[in-house]
Image (cartoon, rainbow, N blue to C red; front, side):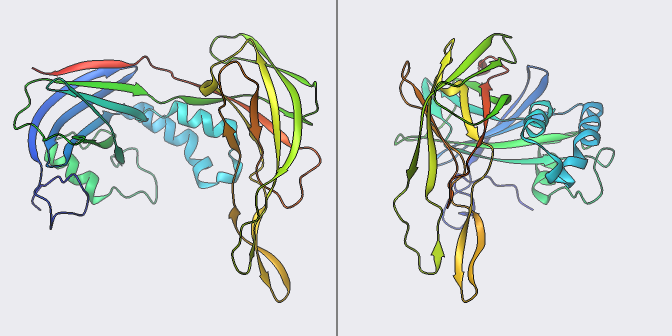
Length: 319
């Protein structure tokens, strides 16, 4: 098949394919080997393929350890799920930007894919045709595991350049989660200590107040939605950045109920799981529980810290 890349997926009837600009740049970031094979100049924006090559031994060990949990997700706690995400040797969860001819282009969306050679694939795994085409087009080693991310950068109202004179790639790792503690019975004045998993510092979460609240009634014929939740205001000492701490209800709440002739029956997932209100710095924080028809007497809360494991990186691509 002919190799074409479009800015709008599925728009090959209306859009001209992007012009491929070979890059062939390999670099290291953290413990991973990254490869940028090419970018594509399209009418609406620039498209970039970004690849991570995994070590076959590390990927095999990861699959052997975590595949049983993936096949039986009921065995995986929040803490185990977080650990598996942190240990993934093919993890490529990044925010990207490009400095293109002096103009900063920000990522608007991305889509991922992966390739596992037979030596580390598991029963039931089948590589996609799209992953195979990426591998073949760029001449990548089929005996290595890969993760692929295609990232889209709009021109933001400007006309795209006819040629690339300068190009730099800016990468920012997205934060990963660490469960630092759990507690039940959020009562006014309660203090819960927890350790920061990276700094080792001890912090204290202090509950200021809790309040039972309700959302406005949602109208949908034949369905009843849970609306009751608990709002918990609290402080943290020593303080942490707002984006670095979340306090979440461990339960996903009640399911939407459909009214039948035999009475209400739960038919859907919870309307809203745990919610985070960021608020302003140096003000008490607010944690919002999931939604319920009747609020449980004692909710179990989970203290989750979010931290980046890699420093931001900027690498010159052209010239």
